[in-house]
Each structure stands twice: as structure tokens, then as C-alpha cells.
Length: 446
Image (cartoon, rainbow, N blue to C red):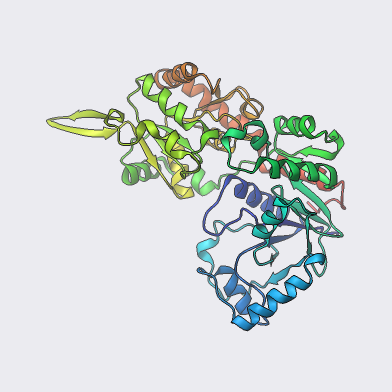
């Protein structure tokens, strides 16, 4: 039975930390496995994985800090790379011998049958793309039938069908919310729109943007959406354990706080969320979980060193000062799931999302959600979340008050959320992918 060889890039699949695109790539790898494909992942680590020793190549891949090769080996390798530059890069297979203990990374690694690496590939393509050159060729001994790039990159694999996922056009639609070089980004998307074998995206809103801004024929672009798939061991953890997680780690009460999770950057609208929360007068705290990104200080200005974000709680004869707003840089995935399940509601009023996975994850866990009525969010959440204009602070205030005071509303959303989330189940995602890949290869075994 035919087993198609489909590779994806490891551009966002950092071993140290993840992003929304990393979640997309990881989920895609497991969907490919379940479709019966032979899955390869192409990394571009700074570590050299060129060696005659299989063990050394494996060690170099996982090593932190990078394993430095002998200076002579490094010099010869650099010289050979410069000679073959016009012909592209050569991918080196990283053998997984099992001699390196990699249990630490298991939760973050994608599914793979093969791991490949080109030293510094993604940094090189970024610089290459800045000057507007042709995409860098990446050569394999035996190329895959399909190379699915999970992000717009100035790379391609000769003799393979090259598919590129464009999640959204935020740098062009909301240029003031990102640090991308807009000219470089425009040139890259323009080139991919013309030369890619196919464009993949994750919502009808993004598909419409790509068609309208770049004139891509509808026949050359496919919306596969995404899948929400939270492991059963976290989804069905006993409520008593969930309560212990949030109480013991953060001192929080089950169903006694509001939650935002995601990167803290202008697109996520955290500054307006904090302003609306403080104006709402609700007493249950707001917990913000996410890494500080570009302009995060501006987004968090209202809670930085300001006493008015704290409130006094009298417990018997003891008066305590507690935070109304708490910002947490990081929570492990199991702990994050407990935080979502324990929240009174998740607040996700993002200005623009290509898909909006955090809202869907919360809905799948039965937590009420407030989100935006812009971009992809209406088509993702349907009637199973409270939608507001993310630019209207007054509407956001009223939404927070409604979720705080109306138990019937919370109950209805908690019941509707998991039902809506089934529209984006792994099985439905796999069916959409099978239809996509079927255009370019024999249908994968299912």
C-alpha cells in the first residue's frame, strides 16, 4: 500500500519553547502519522549535524549549548557550503539511535519517521529573503513527494510539491501590531502566491484576505482549519486535582478568576482588556498567562507598579492585600489546562486571528469564552462564545460583567463550547488534509 512521503519544516518547533505556529506544526505531524504518511521534519539548528558518527550527529541535535566541531571540520564545511551555494543546501539526516535520553523533549517534539537538519537554515533564508533573491533550494538524497512548509519561508525542495501555510496577513492588515519588515514580508508572500504549488491557510477569513490582497485563484488555496486535541489525561483529570493545581501553585480559587492566555503583544489587545476589566468592577481577579513580546510594557502599563490593581480582603481579623490582576510568564501545558478548566471564563478579545486556537481550546474544555467579532473568530466559535467588538472598551466591560454575574449564560456557553469544538476534531482535520494532499499524491492510507 502506498505510503506517501510528506515532510514539514521545523522552523517554529524549538526544543526549548513553543509558539502558536509550533502547535500547528506539531498537530500537523501527528495528523500525517494518522493518515499513514511517512513523516520527515526539517530543522535548521545552529548546531552542525555533519559527522561520520551517528551518535555525534544525534548529540549535536539535542545539545545545549551547541556542540562546537573541530575548527578544521568547521572550516572545510563552510568552504564546501560556499561552493555549492548556487545549487542550494543539502539536508543531513539526524539518526535517532536512542542513545541520547530525550524524554525531556517528548512533550514538545513532533511525530517523525525521519529528522533532517541544515545548519542555520532558517537564519540564512531570512537574510536571503531580505535581499529578494530566489528561494533557497534544500536538497535531499530522495526528495519527499510533498514538502509542507508550515510558515511562509524563502525555501523550496526541488522535485517535490511545495505547499506553504499562510496563517494570516496580520503584518499587512494590522502593520502596527508586528515588527516584521513589511516590504520583505510583502515580497515573500507575493512570490509564494505566484510560485507555490499550493497555498494552505487556516480560516475562511485568511483565505479571503490572501485572495483579495494577492489575487491568488481560489483553486490554488485550501483552508484546512486547525484541530483542537487536548490529551485525555489533562482533559479528564479529577476536579479535585485541578483545584489543587491552581490553589497550590497560584493561590487561586476554582471558578474564582478570569483568564487570558497567549503572547502579550499589541495584536492580542491585552492593554484594552486590562482597562475594561478594571472598569468593570468585578472582584474575581484577572490572570494573564503569557510571554512578554513586542510592546508588552505598553500593554501591561496599567498593572505595572500601580497599587490600584490590588484590593483589600478581610478574612476574620486579618486584612490581606491581593492582586486584582496577576501576570504569569509561563505555565507548563498540564498546568495551563488546569488553569483553563478552573477559570470562571476565558477572555480572548484579540484584534485579529488567523484561527484563534486559545478560544477553541477553552471551549473544548467547557470553559465559557468571551472573544472578538473580527477576522476568523466568528467562524471558529459560532454561537458558543460571547462575541464583542474588540476595539470597544465599553462592550468589553459589559461582556465581562455579564460573564461575572449571569450563571445561566456561563452554563449555556460551557455546554455549547465542547459541541462546537467537535467541528475541529482531529478526525475532521485529517479528512480535510487527506483531500488536500490527494491533489498531489496518491491518497494516504487511513
